[in-house]
Length: 244
Length: 244
Image (tube, rainbow over all chains, first blue to last red; front, side):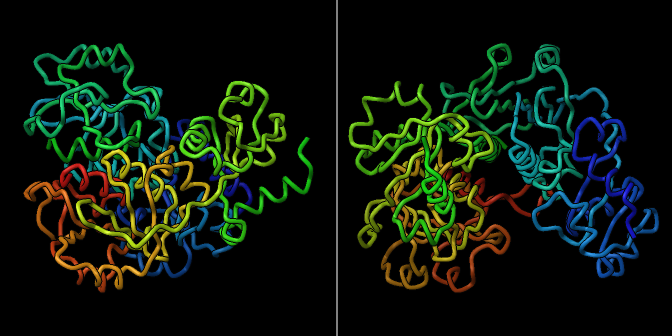
């Protein structure tokens, strides 16, 4: 049985402040929790699963505190509209080492605000083999429940850093920096790259001027119709599909 | 002042059944409502705007019943988390004529369930100059508030039809039909097209078998990483950017 105090604790983890204090985040649903367990079982501190799920996944749960709960209890702790068999409390990732661009393509996000967009971009990065994303400090929190859920498991494989973009980009020498804007080179005319930085900007304001100044090439998805813009995640997907 | 009966009426339009009975839908926010007024002022039956908005847009409102309301009243009728100056009741579009593929590219959606995805796909179609989408009858309703809002105005320019896909596709002769799947030709190796049909499938199940049989070419976005799939709207954006 789930005690009242535990339910409250899980509910507070909906807030960034408490997640940071505790160094954990919430993940839900069989697919995502299984990916987390398979990637690093020791990082999954505690799971709350319905009987079926716990029995089916017993072999993965040796290193984890397991709570078998009822569907009604899951409903009380879940942040999903449709709770889905299991919720896990997972340890946040260690802040990674200073990031080197050498030999890889890194995605940079300047103030992506919408958690769904951030999660979808993490999933897109994973699809195209990009394993490192650098975000401005004002971007959505990677441990926000909507971000975690919309990565569909890719949060396990893609590293995120939050850092001052001006400073970090300024310290990169001899690296090609591509910035998505409305007045750049047609992406279909640009050669594929194996190394470099690709910057995607805020949903309504695009990339901030100071950051745009640090780009070596501005790139654009050519419009054939009358829409004024594309969704930031869709733009990221199109750009990666042409450049990688 | 907004009478109680009117508030109730607007709230019922959140449901498809009532929207169909009344032949209208709800649109919100200055940008979207302005695009609707500019496209066809007579179709905007009634607007509910705060004083500022009504004064600024007086020249567009000659053909429309205008209600000047308070921010608190807008809050009561709005379906948005953050109500934004104006809400409009708009006439649904006439069901269009039988669709001809001749000389154009048509997007076909097989059971797209998520309203945000459908709205984003309409916006993508508009960006790439695709003006006609054909949806299976079990797809999300184009007049759902989340669909309307996430088109960001593109709902004005892109026509949607809901029809039995098997029947409609079966009746198309000598037309190239591309279907997004996980086992098709690499989209980067396919020549650009000026005419044809592009099918995008359901978020988790993809394109149904019966529909897939009617495709002349299966196409795939090559994966370089480990994500199992891409979001349906992102996939649509990538495919259109390569094929058009």
